[in-house]
Image (cartoon, helix red, strand yellow):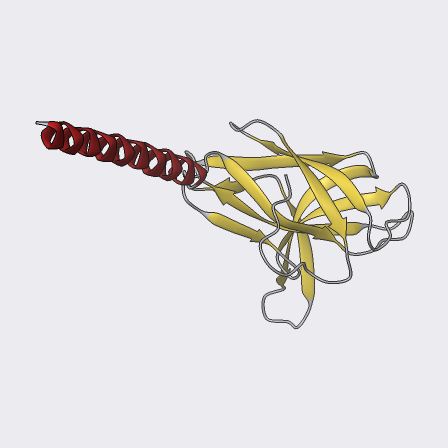
Length: 168
């Protein structure tokens, strides 16, 4: 009788430990899965601008990722420039001449990635109000047709940052 009692106590303790282990495993799995949820909205990565002298124009480059419904980038603003415009550089047809044209919106399809890069799309800081030096950051705000404005922290650098750097 006493051995049955001891065996039952032993089995009950084992059950309690098993339940506790399962709760710990479930809690840890929940934490890891919540950290892996898909992003929503529009995100901006690898934002940078080359050093720019006061009074000159500077081009801001970055990558937009649209994780939501289709949208459009319709403008940008910054306190370090007289005005801010969206531009696209391209080769003039039939020539070796690069031309730059202002564009008034950039379509962002659902699930799309749009690169703003040298020789292509970029945000132009017109008549920069102060010198932009390597190592500092400047603020640019991107404006969308449907999505809320996105403030972007832009690194001043000689070259494009390596790796995936979240900029907002």
